Length: 341
Image (tube, rainbow, N blue to C red; front, side, top):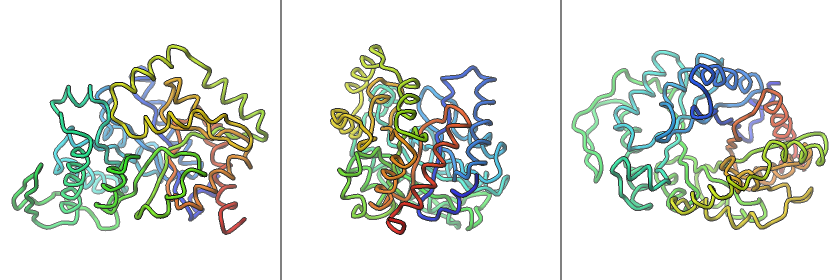
């Protein structure tokens, strides 16, 4: 299946498995498998997480490139982990070695425990201010020439990137954050704001946010609603321990989306409301799911497209078949958008 890359109205990304869920050798094989599955299905790329518990995302990006023909690694970049020059040099180095474009997913961090362990005590809004300054410096370095920059967080003098980056490989820039501060940061740097969505009936402001908008969402789609819900509930059964962990995570996070999504868990999913927060509430994953027949899920995805969503990042695929099922729903959504309804 290759129709997705020609869909035109949106880009579809998968999410890379997390290293903490696999033994070392098994993890490398799994990343390579997911890269092949998603490449063959016509996805645009793969999101690679970063936090204190995971392997370095740039090394995973290299594995994804070497395991695929066209995928773009969507690399999470946390300012606390590397200097802006290092991030820019990594992008340029990938371009020089592989001729493949990288997309940057700029993250401010949400776990107060992890931030504190790194000696960072900036409040939520200030972290996004730092993120904007960081990204502006990365962009200027990638644009070429000698760069002098003096900001609140970073200062460089006559700094020049080597190797230089070819213009056609200039990275896309996403900003992860559902809060107003995250959306404003995306607007300030000309990037795409990536958020965890409410149901489309609650997202009437998407098209008015300015700049690009993307969402992270899981999909379970089958021939009919009953089959899809059977698969979804088997994959994400109720878990009391997970519910307790979820409640504890709420207390150590200042994440806007974490609190906001909890409110929408009160809406009972159904064939007319495929939006489901069961996996999120049981601490099994961190995004809402759309569950139902291909037509049910495609209709919901098409509503997001009509609201201005141009990027979708779907959850970690459990197997190759699920990559294909998801692709079918998105292909139908592309046909069912405003131009086809």
